[in-house]
Image 1 (spheres, rainbow, N blue to C red):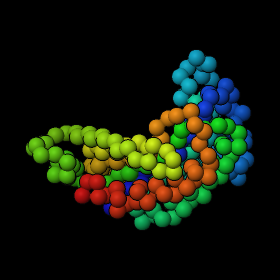
Image 2: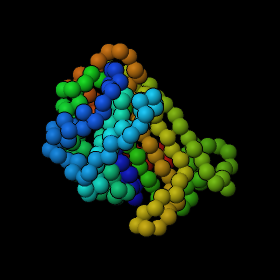
Image 3: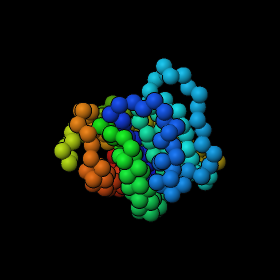
Image 4: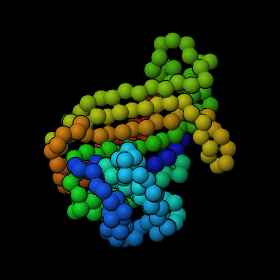
Length: 223
């Protein structure tokens, strides 16, 4: 049975912001003080890479996170390796939170790029065999590690999209024990332009993409 690791939405600013901490209170207030744990504001030098988070917020229960860098802001829902049986409820929760998140960010900043990311783990004691049968014609059953990555370009709502799939054999700790399996990351992001993204189109696109992250679709990549 598939395990859900996390769902994530990244939004990229048109121009880097100099004070990510100023955005912290606005985001948290708009999301109903969802991030109720003590935030971390990191003393990172101004000349450090713009994508490094300067602000990290999270909920006390560890389910929700928000990282704010000079160039981007990320909302993360932690799946905590729960079974695929929670997918519908988790998706409903994610979409509701994302709507508030997008409303908050777009009210304050201009956005030119986004990334919708899903991480999943499929327990499989014969992970290398499963991946070999699905994708490869050579005998790699004795391999310790197999990594695959591919990208398919599509278009939706006026945007050209990268659809990046990464599939790796992996070990994950579930229920306190290390378990062999296959780690899958799906990353849908728009090919950057200087055209501003509209919040309505962003929400519609996310709702359209989420069914492609469903357990049946994900498991079909390796089974």
